[in-house]
Figure 1 (cartoon, rainbow, N blue to C red):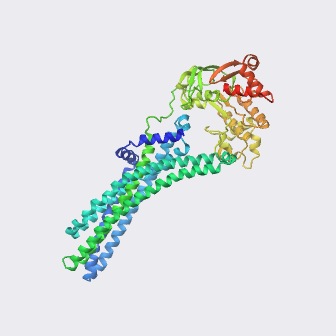
Figure 2 (cartoon, rainbow, N blue to C red):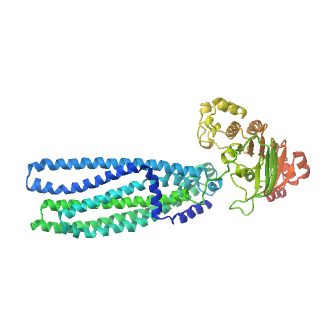
Figure 3 (cartoon, rainbow, N blue to C red):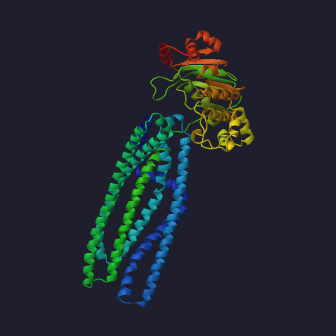
Length: 606
């Protein structure tokens, strides 16, 4: 629900962006290609001129060839027509090709900029946004902007085409032209009226499309869960509801589009009908020639086509502006800002980690997740953090690489505030292995070497051997070139976890964070992974969030947390004697049964 509200909030803000601002932003991306666009523009003018020339050639064709029987005209006029059509096609090809290629270059730049902006945003932004909505902006909305300037060139071309045809009409019979062109202002009315309507509908349609993308992405990503709960029917209903919204808006869009075109056609039909009656009367009375009349009618009929194209181009521009609102609303936002770090490089080795009186709250939380917490870690120490679910363990370690920033208090590494570190330098020196083994749909080699430059195959294999992964990798059909599948779906849980450990070993971080890295594994897999983790933690400052106390009994320091606070610190032997919460955790871990009262106490502590 939070993410839906976010997209609606964005929509209300971006509606304030005016057409002039949006057009200016769109044109700015095409400006580096201005010389190409100039060639396309000149080509468009040529197309406009040849269209008027085509209409004009109807008069000599009728009068000189069919009425007068001029044999020279029989050769010259078809030749002139062929030259005009050839020139028109060359110019139109040049214009269309240049503008489309330019549009794709702009699309590439916009898509890259938008994706780059997203990659620099904080974890909190992604937690409050739906992935489908973001994908819709990166893949769909930027494509709409690509069509903006080509559509404007189209408008300019058809405008000059109209001017040329109007010139032919007036030249042939200015009296009849004045009467016929009286309806021209009426043809502009649908363009203006329905243009605003189409932009409003297009804006809502894009929001709805983003929502249905989100629903589809969430369902396909969680298909195992859906099938496990036999909830296919519920998800189908949810998707159908979103799809119905698109259907409703699409019907309105088609209605507005077709009404615009049909009104223009009817108004144009009235003008042509009148010309046929009035012009025919003048030909029959001898006041005009058949060639003049047919040239006039041809130009008038041809005049409808560019006006129709202007209307269609206006629809494209309105869709582009709706897309621009969403894309530039994100790119230019003063509230959605990239993460910022300092200039201080992280220097190894890690000598000390000092957490002083930090507090942190989630936007949707009723109580702080971390409350005035203080913790000191010496270089080389292995520190375990234990506590009930919801006690703030994961939140605490996420503050160290600055996935979140504390609301109050400070965190210092080697005496330097983490906010002063260069973000890249800080995060390159912190390794994280969580219970959710994150792998990309690429080879095992690429997953182990992820984020590392100039890594050799020998280094990758050495890391895999230390993580007890080399043997099973060699047993796969393609070895290290085996593709893991989306999120490592082709591997078992223990295999995926060993690959993430190998990746952390290759990174060689100064500070290692293990967030319940073995909690999702069976006993056999846990033993293998624990050996790999021991290799990873050797001679390294480590913070281990433990679900199973058996994995942290030998820690240098065990920190017991409850409700975002540290309630006790010490070694296992000390805590088992002095800390009631640790005693309860230990008893629950190592006895087969426990009472309902103990369960309720644990829930209260969390």
